[in-house]
Image (tube, rainbow, N blue to C red; front, side, top):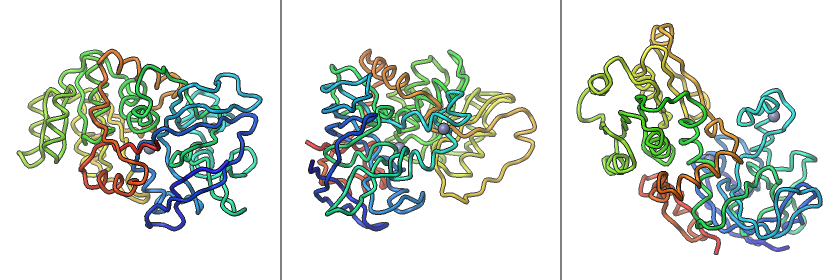
Amino acid sequence: MQVTAAVVNEPEAPFVFEPLELEEPRADEVLVRVVASGVCHTDDVCRNQGIPVPLPVVLGHEGSGVVERVGANVTDLAPGDHVVLSWGRGCGRCANCLRGDQAYCDDMGRVSFGGTRLTDGTTSLSRDGEDVHSHFIGQSSFATYAVVPEAHAVKVDDDVPLELLGPLGCGVLTGAGAVFDALDVEVGSKILVTGTGAVGLSAIMAANVLGCTPIIAVDTNRERLDLARELGATHTLHPDDGDLAEALAAIAPGGVDNAIETTANPGVLRTALEAVRLRGTCASLGAAPMGTELTLDAFSILLGRTLRGVIVGDGVPSISIPRLIGLYKAGRFPFDRLVTFYDFEDLDQAFQDSASGVTIKPIVRMA
Ligand SMILES: [Zn+2]
Ligand SMILES: [Zn+2]
């Protein structure tokens, strides 16, 4: 069938909206009519080859849509189902996948960024007989339709606005999952979140669900700090307002139990780690450019603190996404407050507004 997709033909160039040919779903795949797709920093990193992705390619990995057709071996989905597209289940064969740590699949490079089916290296998209890379993070959701492995599509309730749900597959899941799944966050414990973009604000909402106190938010954007407070932060700190380490120590003497660092700034990461109590944990969620170095006082680790990286919140999307929707419906996880909608054709503008901080989480609507 013919679809319209935002194609990346060369790095650092605007998206080109083109008609492409999309194959029928294979036995383990589903055809999804994409309703909307969140815009994530990782798309931009890949467009500019910060993470190498073969070109031409269709990016997009926070899709939501409706299942139109299913392959012969698909058992858990049917036409008409509402789905959120996510990171999938990894290769399913490596040691980490077998342990349930699919976010850390040994074959993540090929699973997420290979631009082809994992099974046989083919693509589902073409242009005048020439292959266009597909299956980006299993999805390639910057298109009106996508052929997606069943493992990358999570069935969701159909009584919530479908166009809102795509970011639950990546950005929102990353922040919330760090709190719910990755770290051992106890009810009423002390938490610090550095950076109040979509990931940081999602972590703050999750910490609020768990009754953390204090919930300390740090950012250089005062509007975002105001929003952080509305979403559950008990304290907000701007680095211009005085010594950050002193302010943190005054709010949480002895340190916070957990810190969530989302800025990918090495200096901020060090501050977050040093704000954690002895035996506490700092999670690093931000994607700094490859090769970025981090300087630490070795004693900050020797004294029993843990610093660890967390990918997409550690969680299993088919468990985590329905849980977040349940919390949203109960009014306890208002992630819609982070969202600004754009028309699909305004995808470049959505990326620009995200980079400049005008919007927190852009979503492009296909229809
Ligand atoms: Zn993402
Ligand atoms: Zn694996």
